[in-house]
Image (cartoon, rainbow, N blue to C red):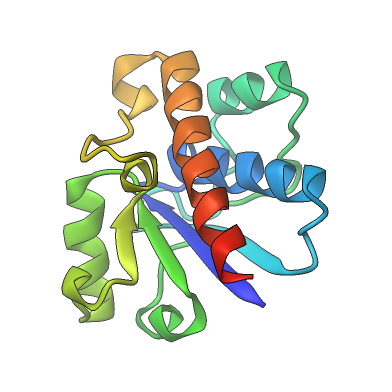
Length: 153
């Protein structure tokens, strides 16, 4: 089984959006039994909080639910549990490296849009308020990730 962990700052907008978008894609490809997906935060400030309402609404506009999701923080040893640790931006990458005491150079920690051939970040809709733009970028990154995973299966 391939294991994917999406990471953002608070685990209430970008990473849960990516988690549930990717789970939806896996279901449509009949790959849910071959890939495990989760998401985490690098910070502690939103631990236990549900998905931010505007992020949840954006997912629902596309027929994707996120019922029961609560923010959790990344733990050091989770590095060993996942094949892909996917950040939304450079600050997430640095925080993942700090928490796990591992390096991006090892190849497991990557930014989501790298899978779409871009070095860009997934913009944080908490600040931009553009949940539709964030959603579209997440879909683009997840489509590239899907191609990558299919090559490994």
